[in-house]
Length: 421
Image 1 (tube, rainbow, N blue to C red):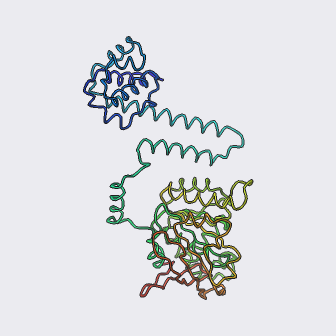
Image 2 (spheres, rainbow, N blue to C red):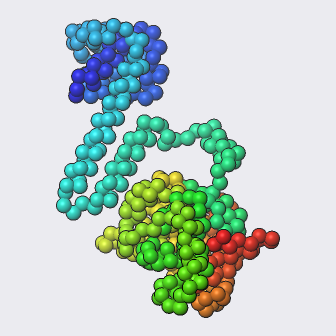
Image 3 (spheres, helix red, strand yellow):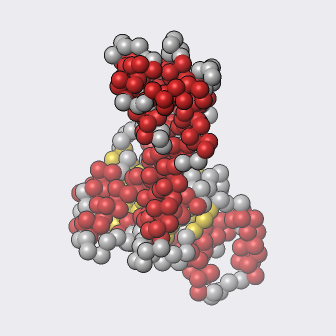
């Protein structure tokens, strides 16, 4: 404990003993705790003064000495240090600030020790410390609870403000209000039904105005960007992938789409595998305003856990990422094989864990009856919004041009939205 800490704590305790009107108490007790004092004696004096006030007794050197057992000489010394109680609130703020500094420094020292230990999961250790620091900050700002009036004003501000969810496809926006911060959106389907393709399209549409992190654990980063460039240019990504039949006109269209692509605020991860904690770190680093994860079954977990346990844990972590970072998270999920035997998939076809449905705010189940050929032929994909915590449920069609990763939404009368425009 340095001299400044000692001086601030002694000055505040001296103010307690000098002030008979206790005018500063209501403000100080709103943020200062006995545990904030580095000096045990000063902490006991503050605690005793609070108890005396609560009991309706006077706070003075005599009552404080009886309550704490501190020597008369020490109490007189405190009164000599502080000649007046005018600055009591400022002293209290200094004591509290020093306490926060000590706690934050201690957490960082603990993290340093963990990182020096062999076998430590670096990302998990960092995230744990971040959580502890957030909890410390939460205690400081008292944002853990919200009263009825505060809740009403928050809703009123949201309704009357200009901010909306992240808008993409009109019918999906109409059903959900757009992708809203703090919410988990699940897009589920069997392989080949357009699940990843729709995720890429939504990410590219959102990236025109928002910072988007697309975390693909199934495709390479290059394959994701090829699909985006294919959508913007209208050139089949199979052509770009295989470098076959690319004409001079194709190269020209690809070059013309370059400026539009460079204007996207889109980041694609390069890691072939990642845990939920590592995904959160990437989202923090990129300051993502929307996170898309493809797909849940490939998010790494504890090898000692069953698939059910891993999926349950990772599903919950994705929900927590949405809430902690206050961003929408789009999570792609595979449906079980039973969905292929049904006319259309149901919520119970979500693979491996019922926690997915529980954690999600919105679940969209994709289904395609017919497989279109590669190229320009459209394939109808049915989107069944089977769960919508804050709105209606409905099934609507999208036209999917598989070869160029393009989607067209024309379900609402008079409204036609092309994902690449």
